[in-house]
Length: 143
Image (cartoon, rainbow, N blue to C red):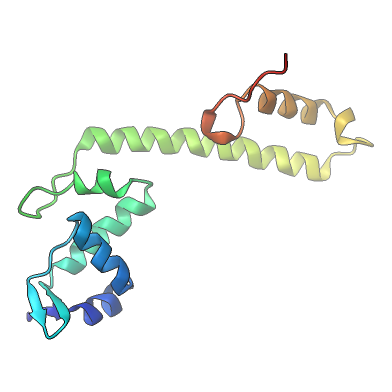
């Protein structure tokens, strides 16, 4: 297959040209030359962009994704890093599920006031202790 210019890569991948240029600056992809002012890429850049998109969707940073490629550009995915990210996602799913359940309860709670609802009060205590919200960061305790 022939080389693809940046416009074609952007069209086929759905990644804006500005992002492609940024990815190239970060070393995630590499152009193979230019046709006029347009960068040219090997067709396999589309697969690489799909791997980058998959990594981003899973919550990996661009620096973490860069580590998933060997110097020649071949994927070199660390299975321990994948397992750690899966554990992180499991924790986030549990947090979000608890938050969803709490919101549903608060929306349908028959108590005259949320402050009179034992379930809502328990959620409030959890938030005050740092167990809910702000990525596990503990909220400051009042003096």
